[in-house]
Image (cartoon, rainbow over all chains, first blue to last red; front, side):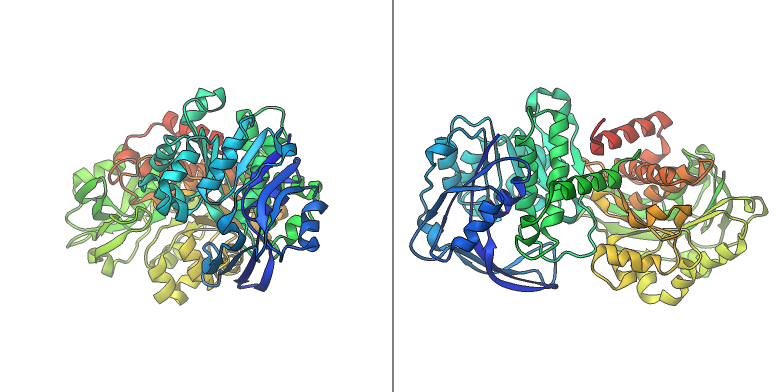
Length: 311
Length: 311
């Protein structure tokens, strides 16, 4: 079943201990789409400038991603420049240029309107809300956000959270959103804001899912969180997009299954970790462009062996 | 099979967001012994001062721990004062008084000399080495250390590491010991110093085990780390002793099994996490004094559900 994702399609310049690159295709919706494309059909809503050429578009098309909803505008695409020289777990932002995103009004192509899954990748919650309202038929809505929206656009963000089935954010964002330092209490505070499930990403330590009392018709879930590890990696070439790739693997796997059961949800977190672990192996989207389903299944098995007592 | 543990038997004064206590029984060997006592026979080597009374000794005896090797010396026991007010994951040390530990010469009671397991809890590596050399019959040696010994007593520590089967330390200590920031490379550096296995403790995120090429006769282990989570806890009353309790659960479970197989090693890490999760639920050793084997098995099952796809 198809996923529509709205979010940034951008260019990044990044420096890591492994090297650097300038103005390569990036953005939350890009990483999400590529990761999810290994599981299901993906349709993107976003905006790009004149620097987005046939070469960038080909990256989406090679993975079968529908780009009809990527609007072309005069000017430059969203641009981010950052580095991870001191700490691979935390980006230092040097430049953020909204460019064409500053005046973006998302339009939903008619052909997207039968999507059963919607993912609101990290952008202005006002835009997230507009797309959410424009797609009332969706069965399941996931979303992401970041510190900036939590701190400075909280009211708009709360309107989005009220409509989410699954929110995927990291530890710091969870605590910021909750105003609580204990991770379990913070998670339950966030569930109180609307999402039926919260997936808290821990970077190199994986992710934990928390569920609200009525999540997915399984009362037992509410009292039991679920944890999936990240793979201990001997080299992280480029952490950019790891969280978006996690979201793409997670949501893509769910969309590929006939029903959202607790077992599917758990496997989805593993697939999220799997896709995040691939994303960081090469610069920018390089690794996500060239995967095979066999490689994904092999790594899924590795994650299972890494954590299961009886395998 | 019996474990002999050498380490501090001490008094702690601690302040946490949940409250405070003054001069309660503590120390690495104490937490280790109590946690391990639920799995096997434990014998302690250490030194205490005149402040160690029948009341403290009764805590060990209630759990069947052999205290013959706890020497009584004139003066005061080792004393530590610390707090966790800003960060539950990191203690702030206010006072450390070595007291009777300053001149301690460990003596191994004759009745301890048939112990098949030896754990060198966190103390001066010179003392660790002396006990190691005095018990040549042991089948398996585990050990712990801390930043202070890594930074300022490295040569002495390296002599201990060369004789260890399993080293249990945290992320920061692993990186310090290795001089490497990447966790996987750091782990392999540490394995190069002697231990056949390294268990890296991640605090609230559990632990990862890494194995050297010839660890426990299983070449496949060398390429596969193993991860066990910590339980997301809604309240951490007192983090003191969590790492030592982890070590006690881990080593105690191994000592209770007929053979050290990869499966036993994996379960041992889960039992370590289980005992760590109990330790922090109440102040000082309170929770570790009153557990039942049923509670331990129940929590072990919870850890399994928390991480396993098919449970």
